[in-house]
Every structure is written in C-alpha cells, then in structure tokens.
Image (tube, rainbow, N blue to C red; front, side, top):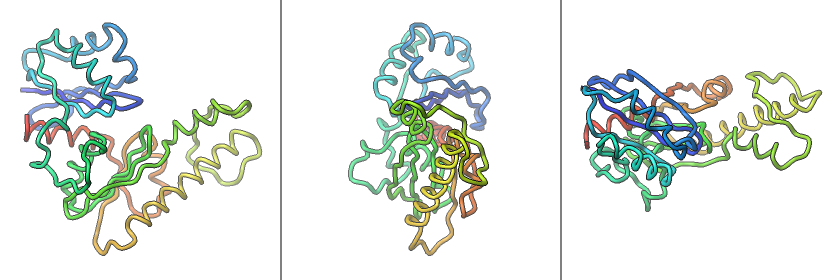
Length: 248
C-alpha cells in the first residue's frame, strides 16, 4: 500500500506519495495560495489517488486557513485528513518548550527526523529562516530570523529603485552596480547571520552534532557555513512520514 503526506507552508505546499518503505514515489509542489483556487487541488488529488493508496492523509501545516480549506476540498474523495499537532506527539519526541502551539508543525517534523542523530541543528530556509535544536534527542527550542526571499521582496516593495534579483552563489567584492551591491548585502549579510547564530547556539555544546540544511537556499549557503553541513530537502516529509507510520 501507498500513502500520502503533505507540508503546507506559508509560500509553498508539497504533497508526496510514499511506498511502504517510506520512499517518495511522486511529489507535487505548488504555491500555497492556489489551495484557495476552485478545483486546483481536486485536479492534483485526482491524479495522485488510486485504489492502492490509503484513505488517510497527514499534513504538517503552518497556515491554518489553508489546511482547513484543503481538508474541506478533500471531503469529496472520502479521505480522513489529519494535522500532526492534533496527534499525540509525545510518543515521537520530547518537546521542551512551554507552548507547543507556538511551534510550527514543519519544525516539529524536521526535529522528529533529526532526532535520529541525537544532537543536531536544523536550519530551514523557508519564508522565515529557522534554526531548531535537538539535544540528546529532545527538542530544546530554536531561533527565527527573517527569510531571505521575503526580505528581498520587501526591499523591492518598500523602495522606489531597488529591483528584484536572483542571488548569485559567489560575491568576490562589493558591488559596482545596484544588483551586485544587493547580492553582496544578502550573501555576506546572511553568511554572517547564519554563522553567528550557529556559534551562539553551539557555544557550550561539548558534543558532536550534525547541522542539516533544508529549504530554498540550502544549497547556496551550504558553501559559506564555517562548520560541516548536510543538505536534506526531504527532511520535513521524512518527519511527517515517521509520524504517519507511528500514529496514524
């Protein structure tokens, strides 16, 4: 049998079909705002669903209205739709914060997958840039910084002359034109931000730990982080899949 899990983010949503070995067989990514477009998600699920797929679907979602809308859309397929924070996650990971409702479901999923390393720091380059800490297999908290793409859009939106641009991987010198100056600011600025936050978090860690990068700019910043890192673009789906297998 196959099963479906999904991750609803502020910017994009990913739906995956997995086999019994939790390997991703199919993956669909689309703008989250399209969930509100009539018929859009129905077309996606019509293509994904067949008699070999279980009738239960699990999502992580940081957009409650989008999850509610998608759940309503999926009623026509007679599916049972769950969100991970509605499940008993204490069986999966100890979360050492006061209010789990303030922790994004995607970050919980990331940490559940990262738990296998016992000690890790997961950096997710999403709408926000998040840093999540797992120590001794316990989720201990994290850091939230401005997202790179969102910062670029805001700079363009609230200035008259600064353009939207694509980040280049390398920046050898300060800019001689506007786009190169912006590229220098974002590459050097986030390089300093990321390395500084890593150092602050791990200052007193007297243990081996793994740094995992995921999200849109993971591959770009993998080269500028001072410590050894691993890129895993499927970490969120892997975490949701583990919850599915254990709790659904």
